[in-house]
Amino acid sequence: MKQIALRILQTIIRFLARMVVARYKPTIVAITGSAGKTSTKEAIYAALSRFKRVRKSAKNFNNELGVSLAIIGEWERISSPVVFFWFRVIGSAISQILFPSSTYPEVLVLEYGADRAGDIDRLMDIARPDIAVISAIGIIPVHVEFYAAGVEGVVREKSKLATKLPAGKCVFLNADDIHTPEIMKRTRARVETFGFSENATMRVFQFNHIYDKSTIRGALCKVQKEGSIVPVTLPAVFSVSHGYAVTVALLVAAEFGINIVSAGEALSDAYEAAEGRSRIIPGIKHTQVIDETYNSSPLALETALKTLSLITSRRRIAVLGDMLELGDYSLKAHEKAGKQILGAVDILITVGPRARFIGNNAKKDGMKEDMVYIFETAHEAKKVLQDIMKEGDIILVKGSRAIGLDIVLEEIVER
Image (cartoon, rainbow, N blue to C red):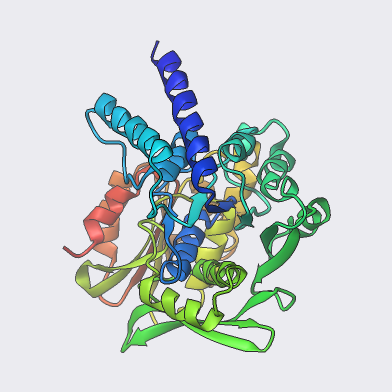
């Protein structure tokens, strides 16, 4: 009965969201990918918000209901009592359709999740994008477990955002992603690229951490498009993944006719790393914690470890949990991650049955046995971590949400 009620509700809300889009005709910027979607959304919003009336989808509102909610209003969460909440949403939508408002956003920045085949089609049916962004897919994408065709199925689904755009629209693709050349061949839309590659339309050519004595305060990212160089200061961020978010945000801003230097200044002023997405937090014992607890995937973990390898003056601890929803690719992905540890991490703590393979392969690759700790649960890991950590350490905490590494985070973050 609940499932039937949910389907009816989805149909109603989806219909009303389509009507709102038809009434106001906002420019739709849609973002998908297997890593970096939320950071990209936050960066685009920050780059545009000084110049346009813009709204972004809240937190992880990236399914049919979530995208529809973002179109209808600015709800941060589904509040209780739930029945009254949905009545308010429906009432708000009907009011906006019947009595047009001059304050409705000119631009909607929406995150399109694709956990399963068909998700992108359903989301595009609600709001067909004018500008599409594919943040990154990677060799082994997250959610691949739910695709019968494996990696090819994920790529096919995510790339629909580009391949179903008509000529005259624009798609921004990651120049460093292995799947980008194939997607470029299959779209009729105009393509521009972003990333660290020299061939990227908008290129990150420098990403350095900003220090106050030995404390990392954030990062300075320098971006180049043709002859223009734009510096962007990113407070409290760690991973180079934020460099990708900045480049595509500047590309989107340029698409709206906004000067990229002005957009870069807006980013420096307004961009904040979302919770759990490579945000730097003060830790106990005068340490620093890199919070990447929202999720993990092979590409995101590799990027985090590459960034950690840039830190050479401090002891580096990594607490790594299972990467879930990888299906038949799980063993390969965790073993490969183990080979990326040496040179990036001084002490490794793994949590979960799959992450055990990260630890085992790190030892096979030359990491000292007494520098690797393997646990089944986050509760076990947090006790040992508190004993191990000392002043000056930098600690990466990363794993899929269901592994519960937020428990570890709560124990070591300074209150």
